[in-house]
Image (tube, rainbow, N blue to C red; front, side, top):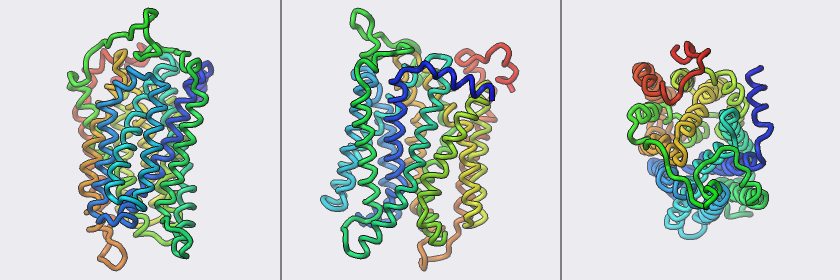
Length: 454
């Protein structure tokens, strides 16, 4: 508890800009994760996309988000800075969501393609610029909790969208069945999430003034941190592409990351097809809200309690816990096991996810935060794409719709669990080699050296 109190005290003097960055990123995350789990269903019911191809569309979209993080976020951070970078990202996201909701009414797949491209630009820019903002508006002492707060509040906002989504979806489905609206429940949620994004944009653009943005705690490259002569500072340090241990470290987590993609590609269809009506009517409470709310509660506590342990140690333990949770679903559909799954999975995620992002951002030399964040997210490209290529087929094969075949959901989840276990095993096998490369970059405090080597 002492560690937790001290960590929060470090944020007492944080500038207003820090909280506005957290607000903008978190509220937009609520909209993003409100839309994402319903994407495959929206594409199938409103746009007529076949089940095995709907997941491919979603994977291409999520991969595009990561590509933007990698290829465009650094120029945006350099030229626009944190304030204008976030405003641009939110503007693109709100425009993209408006086009996305219109696709079922006008233009079909052509409109859908434009919508996903515009939204991917906005979402891909937002995360790395927001993380650069956390580094800029915290110091070395408060940085860890700054990243944890961003991750935690993002999950709180994402979790809050679940009850709203479930209510909107079920009520608008009833209205459509009664012939009083042309919007399906899925599309009504899309428009509700558009409103959430617009709210984030308006509040951030109004309160994040130039004066607020100028209160910098740690200097970072960008227009707001130019030297007195008005010249932007030069990049310093190596490229992440030249560090084999860093690359292995981030790619070793690829298998367990597939479980995150299954949260929106597989879990909604699994719940809607395998559980009774009282569960399906509240599907978003499980799929949208359970994990994010738990993450909000667990991340600050576990970050404070485990920050003395080396990041590799936490990656091994956390990814092993996340992977093991999937086997709870191998016993077949059960509301109890579903609840336990989200609990165990969330504990594992809380142990490693925020620490991983902190490591990537803190390792980055001055002016390379966005680039390192982008490279750290490259495995997301592979995980999202490969998961989408087979998740629709796996659902159709192992969890067919009622009356279309035998459901064997336990087998499907057991397969996914075995895939995820590759991550902790790979990190455990290569642990000594990875630690040798990190010894200089992330030294443990002198009184905690044994813990880092444990």
